[in-house]
Amino acid sequence: MGNTKFTVVAHGGSGSDSEHCGGTEEAVHACYKASQMDASLVHSVARAVCVLEDDGRFNAGAGAHARENGTVEHDAAIMDSVGCFGAVAVLEGFNNPILTAEAVSETEYRLLAGKGAAEFARERKMEPTRHHSIPGGGKDFSTPPTTDTVGCVATDGATFVAALSTGGMAGAHYGRVGDVPIIGSGLYAGPKGAVAATGDGEAIMMKMTAYRTYQLIEKGGKPKEILNEVVGWFSSVDAFGLILVTPEGFAGGSNRSMAWSSGEFY
View 1 (cartoon, rainbow, N blue to C red):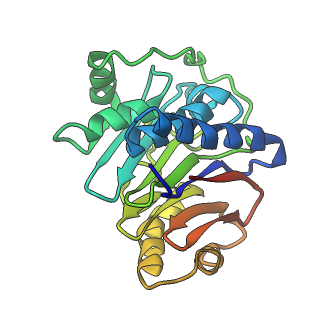
View 2 (cartoon, rainbow, N blue to C red):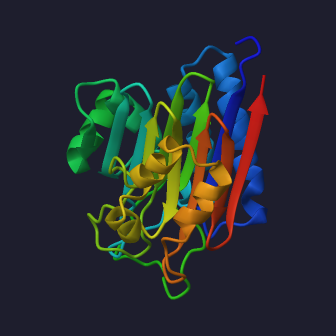
């Protein structure tokens, strides 16, 4: 990799806080470690998200929220700046939905959902989940969970990648899909940078948040200024957080608390 700067930013979701930073820091280092083992940038970012999915404290993978009927349904997506995109929605039964999304990106498909996504994951021998449905629901949603969608963005100086994973809205109707697997809503990557959002999925979708953020990057905006502008699109009622990386640097922040970590490596 020579003197090329490798930059990684990972977030633990809107509502996470400093107590969760150990997880986001581990994710950053997992991404860089994978890159040093000759993994592609896409797979390196997927490994970072796997760390957050396996942590158990975040709304993704092992820590994913249950739906109103007790099922645990995952959405995940990954995208790079040179034409790669893969996503899954309403995926049940597998530990690391981001790896299934990555596998989808290697096919002629871009998004698989529900039983079709699960069948695809089984065919690709993805690891079955330790997380089971809760009969009759059974979770107490009177106190909302504190964390939301997790994500990672990275660049190796030539390519940009963004990835997200989530269990979705706690207590939502089964089958609900948010912004995560929708290209340009929760995430976007292009030749000028990468963006990964978190928060109120419906609000993020309605604003086409990730792609509009990327347009600001294309116009030459500075990362911190872009972050502040985009956060301002959301009212205090709508939880929202964002990380982005550009050739000029990176930024992260939220209108709530949000654990995020970054690393620059040479």
